[in-house]
Length: 102
Image 1 (cartoon, rainbow, N blue to C red):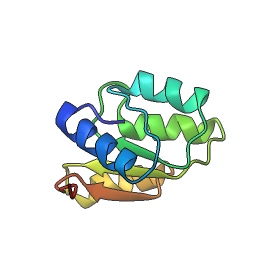
Image 2: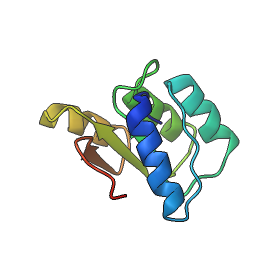
Image 3: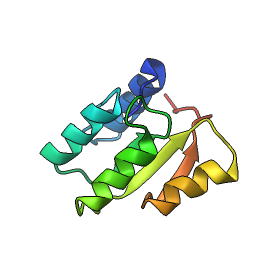
Image 4: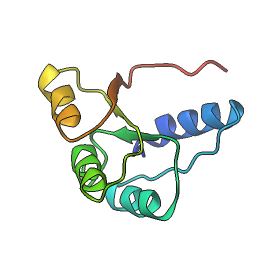
């Protein structure tokens, strides 16, 4: 669940290359729909995905009883932003300054 097309494409390609299936949502509403319709081993969720944002998507999924592990991606490096996600039930935070190995 990533709104940046380049990052989303790179993540999807890397996951598929590693033998995983991947669905991409470019906004929070689509992310919630996909999460409710499917069964996922994990969710990669952008903190700043368009409405609702990643924190709200995580909060709503947890309030519905969805216990799927959530890994939050963010370009923000402030501790407060990371703690916000942990407070609503995400598993961990990855800073989105990363590269996928070809």
